[in-house]
Amino acid sequence: MSYASNRWALVLAAGSGTRLQSLTADSTGTSVPKQFCSLNGGSSLLEEALARAAAVAAPQQTLVVVAEEHRRHWQDALAALPAHNIVVQPRNRGTANGILLGVSAILERDAGAVVAVVPSDHYVEREDVLARTLDRAMTAVGGERAASIGFLGVKPESADSELGYIVRGEPLGDGSCMVARFVEKPPRAAAAKLLKRRALWNSFILVARAATLVRAIALRHPAEVAAVRNAWRMARSEDTAGELERLYENLPEIDFSRHVIEGTSAPLHVVPVPACGWSDLGTPQRVAECLGRAGVRARQPRKQSRTFNLAEAYLRLMGATSAQTA
Image (cartoon, rainbow, N blue to C red; front, side, top):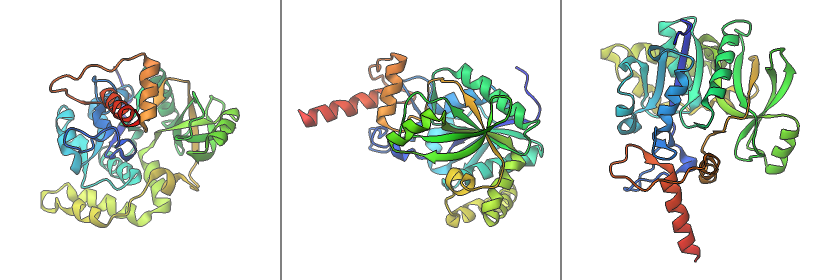
């Protein structure tokens, strides 16, 4: 497969998956972040995200942002990646800081980089549908929409009150639209009204030039941008390896959606993705829905399973719940 030379992918894999902790506790009672789990015993969600990134960027131009505290989960899973493509945060400090650190690493190698930011905790049934839209979105920000940040908005399959929505604004002529507003986890009745307005689920998959992402974060958090970029440059030399650790001790947690995009003056557009069986697997119910749509039965437990199996965990949880209510 051939790729445009300035295309990069940034896979976000530093989250702790707190909303799904009731389902992801292992035999020791420790929660396994969902990106290191599989839906039903196959590839982990992180591995699926890496395959998703490979649809638009070469492996040598794919970076993964991880947290030091999860090293036992990601070390083997990322063994095939070059060490300099694994960006290790001393601890998770929110999606904006993860994006900023990853983009800082990319900009050191390519000042004109066009980046696809891909979360690693999603499940997609029709990867081909998503891949075509992601490719189109990257082409746009590499050309006529160079100053804009593009979000992939998935056509909703239900009025889900646990997801974020993007309300479409002015059409842009190629099926994309300006972003009118974001709505985060509306009540079900409000979500149903959003569907009538042709709002889209916010997948949090986004595309932009690397420099555009840095500028967008700097509009709201200039001091943190300067500190993170400086710490990253200094951390590349052995004698200042603790620079990031020192910075992250007091670095505020910054969420990209709430603390950067909400109220920003940066141009934003949304690229609609046809229904493709996308889910963020954010709750046990959504895990069950994905299993049901795929017509998958949970496999019997296997010895030394390579990944934590969400299907098996869901069956155990439902079995325990049934026993308590019997």
